[in-house]
Length: 405
Image (cartoon, rainbow, N blue to C red):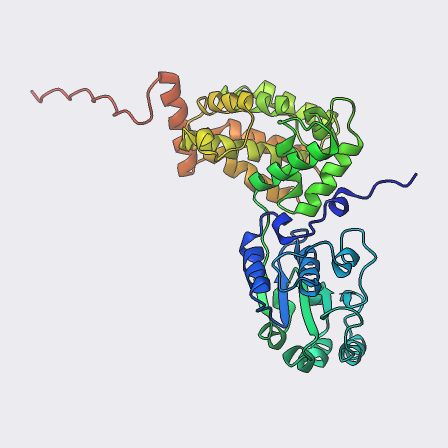
């Protein structure tokens, strides 16, 4: 029995309506297709895994659909079936990987073949992936063809680095920049896929998967595919996601944050020891700690941040964030976040990561060693908290000096 295809291949969109997070691109393209105002050349740019090549294939399907002009391919005609997900492909839609076919000889070969009419479709469509890898000589060889193509020819360039596509080519294309997909849209999409796959995805594990994908749909689906492959009867649990993705468990972060709030050095260095002894990456721990401090800064600055949707966290964790933010003054939180952020820069190429992690924690614990304005403000926050003084309340009146005799 053959192994199933990867998620990002099984669920590759077949119409523009199925492409998520790119409405600023798909809506104008659908209007252009419906009105039969399609340009002869397009440039799709943006981060990896955001739908550039997929959208190029959908555009080619819609152009060659027997019901064209139409905004979305019908999916019924021979051309649509050939270019469908898992279909055999069409001889008139040619995908070229410019990373290995970007030379001037390849461009000349393409130019010679381009003038032949399509075999069975309305248009001959060239999808040139990784277009920034085409050499300047190759682009110059294509320039006249891209500028004045025969009526049956369409070009779609896809690239992660549009600045490397020479200006004379860019100026002859319609440029559509793709973007990273927002976490909310990506999370909703993952839940739909898990329902389709019949696997449960724990609400606490969902933010970890979205975060690991960093806004790229393909990367996120690869992460989810790994988790689904290792899921047991309970589905994708928080513990499974933490172990496979290498994130720091919430319990360990809670312990560290509570210890920082209480100035408990023993517990803080105990957490560092647990991180090292359990084989976790010290840099990853610092990144997760910075992410938690960022959440606390937002909760402290915007008390109703959770109701407004500024933070996407489960209910029980939301209450914990509010409680933890109350244990710090605003200056303490921002100062701690700055220290962790600075330490992350030092982790690159570090030969003693444990030492750097311990020094980072020591700096957070001892604001008295910091002579900056933030250090003084952090000390003031601690004093006010110990005295039970609200940071926004007026200072008590000073004792009047005795009158001179």
